[in-house]
Image 1 (cartoon, helix red, strand yellow):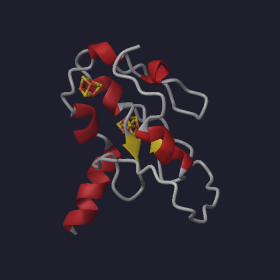
Image 2 (tube, protein in one colour; image 1 turned 45 degrees about the vertical axis):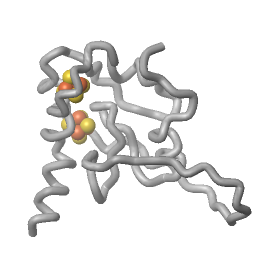
Image 3 (cartoon, protein in one colour; image 1 turned 30 degrees about the horizontal axis):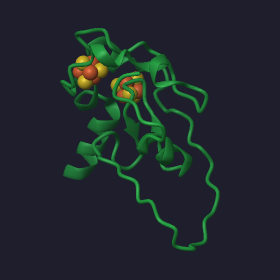
Length: 116
Ligand code: SF4
Ligand code: SF4
């Protein structure tokens, strides 16, 4: 097990129904693409909660991130709630170059909308 936690922020975010995990193993939302940093707040405050539907991955046939990853860390697997991180990425190959984030079409769309 390498750089792994029992309850990742990404798992919580997908259960909150605000996005999905792309083939680049990054959390993607329709609003901010993968250009975001997520965190989790633990609390025992008695707040009302509601269930949320999981958003399925919206990568489609795109494989930009897989093609651009120079070290071959990404495996081309489409995420589902049954997926393990290791289905998607070989973590110890990843150099955190962030090319898979920068070149994702969702990131391009976000930047276009931000600049318009
Ligand atoms: S951060 Fe770089 S090395 Fe890691 S998966 Fe993305 S493209 Fe590959
Ligand atoms: S580059 Fe394409 S395949 Fe990779 S995460 Fe973005 S949309 Fe999905």
